[in-house]
Amino acid sequence: MLNQLFIEVTRNGTIESQHFGAAVVCDFKGNVLERWGDTETVMFPRSALKPKLAINVVESGASDHYALDNGELSLDILSDLAGTDIQQYPMGIDGCGFPAPTMPLECLGRTIAGFANPVNLSSQRAKAVYRLHEAIINEPLYAAGHGTVVSELNEITKGAILAKTGAEGVLIAALSEQGLGIALKIADGNARARPTALLAILDHLGVLSDNEKNALQAHINPQITNSRGQIVGNIRSAQTWLRAS
Image (cartoon, rainbow, N blue to C red; front, side, top):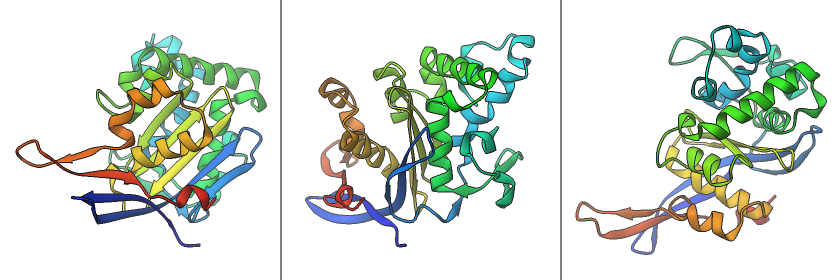
């Protein structure tokens, strides 16, 4: 399957660049609700997995033993969440030297959905997941920093949408109220395309209020400026891709 045209970058109304990729929406029962592009090829989630990897830190009691606060837990089990054996896929090495698991994008979407609503997990593991929800909600800036779509989504929606980036154009979002997980990957790895693509999916799903969309406008339709501060173009969602699900 070919990747989907997600994003157009314009200059003076003319398309200058395009970004293609894949995205998937899954529910906590493991169902794929919508997909765009190639969601079956194995990919590296990279840091998008950190909140899931942190589950074991809480579940094991290490967070209590070392008195980790919300900020520390907000920075950073996969087979259980994804409903499949992750060990069947190749393993790489991350930039920090840690193992970097791979999985198809659909598997990542199921993992995120299981994190959004851990009802199918053991009570101990579900408790650890909710503790991490609490940490991210209380310290949203630790997830990615000021001005990022991740921290602003976490803060503006008051934790209803918990997002996290991964290197090379990866972005995920857990929708706790709906029990949904969204995973997307920009094929060329360019980070500028992923916020607008994610927000287009969230708008398509009808989970953002008008006030929330207004507050996130800088990420929905980012403006491109020149060295004099003049607006010379924009980054926008391609017109037809959400009808290609």
